[in-house]
Amino acid sequence: SLLNLDIDEQIPPNLYKAVAEVFVWLMQSEKKAQMSKR
Image (spheres, rainbow, N blue to C red):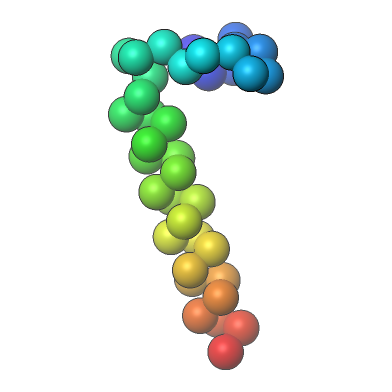
């Protein structure tokens, strides 16, 4: 699991999809926050 990884440790290939989904969620959240400030 990602919780067991140290900082700067390589992400195992079987977790790539999970990490990508987190990045997508973060980007979408940032966009929504910027839109609500307008």
